Amino acid sequence: RQMCIRDSDYPVEPLDPLPNLACAVSRRSPREPGLPPTFEPGQAVTLAEALEAYTSGAARACHREAWLGQLAHGFAADVAVFSADLFELPPSDWPALRCDLTVVDGQVVWEA
Image 1 (cartoon, rainbow, N blue to C red):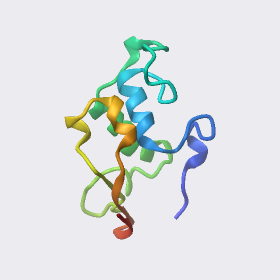
Image 2: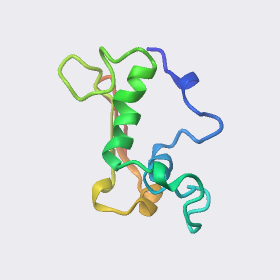
Image 3: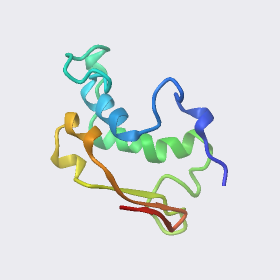
């Protein structure tokens, strides 16, 4: 299956989604988390909006929305399970979380 890295900001931004999600929600640099918002704080999004951009939004960008980007019957089961619930923690804590399980196309490819 073909990946869609060409449609991301990589290598300008890292591929690790947790610091990038934190930046989208808090508008704080993942490289300098102690600083105040540095770029257009009014453009912050909710966690739900950021996750949508990373999932179904990314699938649309790659023209693969017919089988990627949703947890639904008939879709490729690509899932990452983190060590804590992002909705329960402040964005500043997200980059320190670990990935406990990764499933790609329905197969477990990483388990802590």
